[in-house]
Length: 125
Length: 317
Image (cartoon, rainbow over all chains, first blue to last red):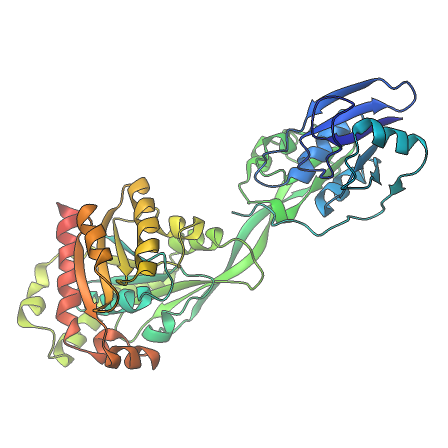
């Protein structure tokens, strides 16, 4: 399965970034072969709509599932119709992308069926 | 001529100055007042217009025709606010992110996008007894974005108001006959050009709604008070005016309280102080009971006429 993990660097050993829309980068990893690439998040400095932009970005990368720490309503409403599954990894435990991948493969991550928090002040300047 | 009355700090006397300036100007000019403080417009409480015109305003949101949409993604690409996402065979619109710019509609090669008005507030207008052509915006509670309402307010020109402007001359004549405080010199200025004066009462603050109110103005009247709070916010608004290249004059309200830091700042930065209104209990009481300054203290009518004249001369220079 092609998995996206939100991360703060550019390696499999980089720290897990618990934010989705504002994650520094994404690690795209094939959970069967272990092949991975990293991609800077184009939505990192978006003035608004980061969740929508990040979700479209990972959809274009071909992700079938995402692991992050939280999903806002716009990210959820974009990922969900794209058929991308959303998993939650524990935050505040200094995990690396490799740790998160291991947890995913061990079936230890919970799937979320709803946005995990309310929207941020959305654009509208 | 378009004059914006702004302050940065709330409660310095923007509406006090704007309404009295309007009443003094209306003695001989066609005057239009726009209350651009759409979150809390209260100039009408002083001017008592007969608000008989109303229009709903907001932004135009895209509506996708799924039958025509080919999911090419051009709309999502052009959207600066990420309000559209194209995911596989679905085009999603996020209305709360949309700014209503219309770019998506323009770029759609299939003409699959139509637009619907998302109502964010209303515009209201009417004439006051003293012949001021008044209009205001009123934002719906819970709306996050005031700028589109202010933009629509500035553009609004209902037919009844155009007709009303024609009646202003009549009002002015009536006022001249009834108001002994309108001096001979003013009254004889029959041939003076009646180009019309637009006075915009700005919202407090120093962000987008204030900038939108200032945009297109000829002169910016900054009302402040001689306190550290007045000065702090005066600096912010003055810097916006510099950025926009608008002429500025300062009115110090509640003169006599606080310190002289505002005057020093104005002197050092070339901001002319055009008027000072002293801190007097009778002014505060009159304004608290809904009276304008020129009605409560008629001796201020000449001062506001002089202020308008000063602004006109500075603008013409």
